[in-house]
Image (cartoon, rainbow, N blue to C red; front, side, top):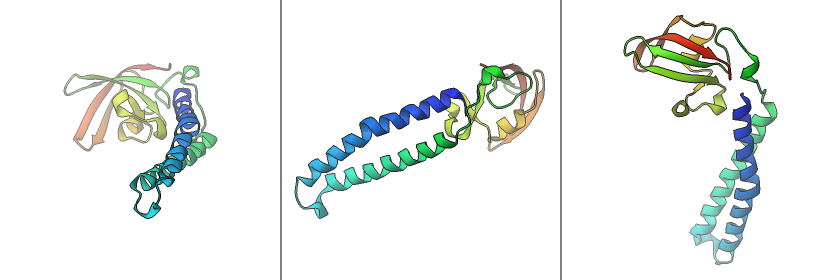
Length: 151
């Protein structure tokens, strides 16, 4: 995982523990004061939220404890994990830039491409000027690698 991905997950964990967890505990206490718990929707909603928060905390703690943080700035050469790659679609001439990141930090809308995606797997080991063929759900696509950076 990249340093930025690690920091983002660590921040989410801190917010869950210091803000969300105490807030849901207060909400449960308030709902209990309203009486009969069997028909208390506020209580059940708060308990459900607490269950989600605790599950997410455990998930994040597990991910962060096993994470191997890689600094892309120390890498160079052909495309590998952490590379920021600018591609051009050979059919539409549309340029796109992606950073190849770990599964838990991937977000295609922000240009963070999952290392396990078909496109990332096709790009690994390629160099500037190389062409790649990728089988996507939308059909076969061809891209040319314009630029590789390690930030």
